[in-house]
Image (cartoon, rainbow, N blue to C red; front, side, top):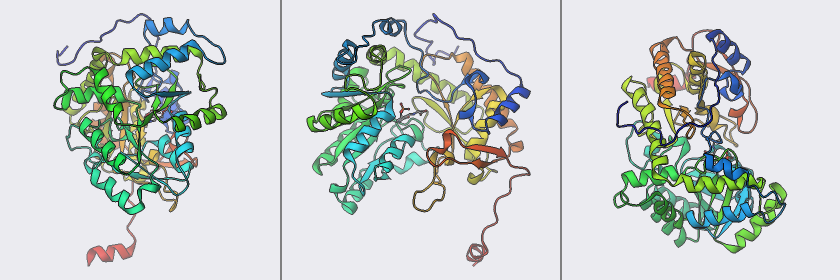
Length: 477
Ligand code: F0G
């Protein structure tokens, strides 16, 4: 194996068999699933790259911790352990456990947002924006323009454009911006990181206007790794030290522990402000549970506390991000368009460039994900027009510039040989890309439609809708 790619820094103690299926079976399974990979059964998938969320393999030490669960209704010792670990590594004073990230988003949005508010952020995430909108806020994307271009290579494509943020503050007034939500890394931009310099500048600007900064810390360890590798002055710093400095430029965070805390379930909300904590601990009782368990069993909190300690190990995160780069390199060498540079948790295929003959209304990324499943039993996820949903006012689709298929690498689960299988399937599809047709949506749920929408293949060859005559005249003129 090429030494540019580090070997796994762990050995395998428990194995789980995976499905081996025929092409005919997969044709049937995807049709039954309405051409939506979310609706496939796990035992129909050979390599499951749907998400890196909750799919982590826990360590022997975490499993040992599961046996030490203190399942008291209140004041569990595992909560006290989690609190201590979060204070040590993240540096926030208060922690409210939640069942997963969106539980924390729900609490934060309910506590801080008033109808008519604006919440700026570096590109949206589906559940985060849904909670903001549900509480009456308008989400405003203030990420740098380059983040919307899959081919521009920048070290920190997740950065906030300070000029955009200043413009928003000038337009709507700081009083209508309860907080800024800064995601580290930015999932939908391809797992792109934010630089320490940008975090510092954003925090200063917001503080000057009395606007709080709340991180979506979901993949903050991967972000810290990129800072170490790419930002001047951090090459010698430990992941733990970088993480602590990152968090010092925030007033709090939401966390999906299912990613960078290396657990299958869990999350938390953090803050320094006593008042906010008071409100959060009142509300959490309604939605999650007591403030000392927030929807989690004692054993889950113990696993998360131990996972946080493991996550700041350089060898762990170095290998993790290297696996993503390995898959991206194999695709790139074969001429497959992928988002650049490779992010921390996934490889994103540019479906618009892969299938240029399929218009966005015919869901190129959804189509490609379905085809990849049929090709080799690899389950990926659409991150394009279906995930973006509809505009609340106009009812039209949001049309994101990025129309992507996400090949998400679970933590500590697959080997390089599995990734070779994925690469070979993508290459085979790319060779026959001209034969691939689009889909039409036959069932559309109102909220977070990508989870359960159903599709069917278009009957004939894809037709681009004729432009209205007026436009044609305009173009001719
Ligand atoms: N924020 C980001 C950036 C996420 O990627 C996710 C989940 C959440 C918040 C919500 O956390 O799932 O624990 O409630 N992302 C998963 C994914 C679902 O596949 O990207 P959750």
